[in-house]
Image 1 (cartoon, rainbow, N blue to C red):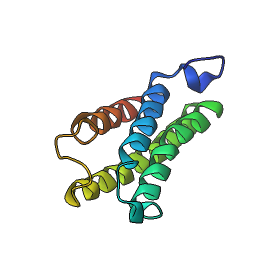
Image 2: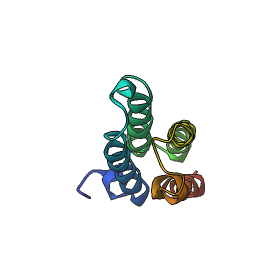
Image 3: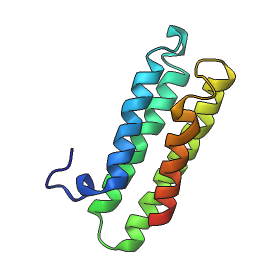
Length: 114
């Protein structure tokens, strides 16, 4: 997945891209009536995470990069809430790896780089 772009070499960005892929895979099984509701919200929040990491990596200086990491962390918190809603509505199992490990690991990674 890595190439010549600075953000594509970042392990954090690569992890966030895997999260997007997982969110898309998981939400395909959600009820069709959620297509413009929870499914759309989860996908948009997930996409925002690597997008902000990439934008921050393209900026000049650590302060700007940190700012965009903060936005990415906010999107991850938004996604966390949406995953909890999906669990509450029984769209997603509570022990699903996405709920149990993937998001908390990414949160730690973002926080460590800020």
